[in-house]
Amino acid sequence: MANVRVGFIGCGGIANGKHFPGMAQQEGVDMCAFCDLILERAEKAAKEYGTPDAKVYTDYHELLADPTIDAVHVLTPNVAHCEITVAALEAGKHVLCEKPMAATPADAKKMLEARDRTGKMLTIGYQYRHFPENQVAKKVVDSGVLGDVYYAEATYLRRRGVPTWGVFTDKAKQGGGPLIDIGTHALDLTLFLMNNYDVDYVCGTSFEKLGHTLDAKHQGQVNYRGEFDTWNNETYDVEDSAVGFIKMKNGATIVLRAAWAINMAEDYAANGEAYTMLAGTEGGLDTKEGRVRLNHVVAEYPTISWVGNKVSGFIPGFSQGPAPKSKEAEIWVKALKGEGELFVTADQAYVVTRILDAIYESNRTGKPVYFD
Ligand SMILES: NC(=O)c1ccc[n+]([C@@H]2O[C@H](COP(=O)([O-])OP(=O)(O)OC[C@H]3O[C@@H](n4cnc5c(N)ncnc54)[C@H](O)[C@@H]3O)[C@@H](O)[C@H]2O)c1
Image (cartoon, rainbow, N blue to C red; front, side):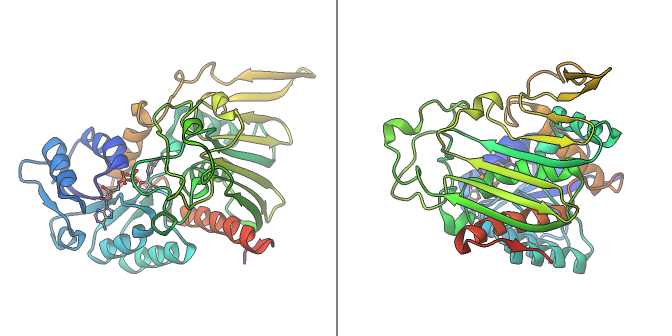
């Protein structure tokens, strides 16, 4: 079977941190085209990861015009996801687009429609689902030991952790701040574990408290991951934290919390990662410390236990733990070769985008947003 030929649009942080190393580990893949507005980034990527004849571009239309390319990864800031993904699907390419699917539900819908029109595959880069503790949590939920899961908390909090590379604090390019950037992971993970995408209504608040005001000398302090720098108060124009209340049609309820800057210490417990807490009629679990903690009843005794002991050790983050990024690439490449199914569907990611947008809208209007 011929190798699958893959192109990459956007050669910045996530491209280098996840997509290039993840795809380089797969058999039967030609990483043959790299595009970035900044030519040197595309050239560097082609040199490090590309086939000997890999091409570089600054205009993604030219990359898409190459009929030998089977699939592309869309790795640009959020507002460009829709335009590039739709163009790629129309050009006959399968697409792995980074999270969030799009900056707005209207854009995400256009992407779904383009997928359906073209019959090409579309998936979204929610790698948290592949973290070992989350895979184990999924098995626990599906085994039924929690009973009916009726309440969940989806959390990704950084006490101080504003991304200072790229355009993350620019609303026009990203569509929002921590809610759309990292809250999206926690929400995707929780909906996936609950296997419930049927939303009744959403309320929420987003705060703009610290992004504009926090003194530079306090910005980088006590940041667990230690990989973020001080940010610019003047150009910061997104929220710094947000909370959502999501009521599902079956009555189940999710509280979503996301922050890049908040005076709460919870990122320590979660090792700076997304986690979830589920409560069911028979038991509950959380994935707070990179492992699955179950609370249940054993012989009438309320019991807290670790499922499978400590699952695969502590997973510090996608940039350090090879498993999630290569797992995402592995599943994707199998699907491209016609040997497997997509794991993250665009329909699921669309619901995530709708919920996040509804939280922003509820904050603006002070009202709940009802889904149809
Ligand atoms: N899955 C994750 O955990 C995760 C982590 C970080 C970022 N992301 C997502 O990845 C995307 C990119 O984030 P990043 O951290 O890599 O940002 P980045 O700024 O480091 O990289 C983006 C790159 O895209 C290029 N670019 C912008 N517009 C372009 C266009 N029209 N054509 C070609 N290149 C273009 C930029 O020059 C830049 O090099 C965002 O959507 C972000 O939400 C996902």
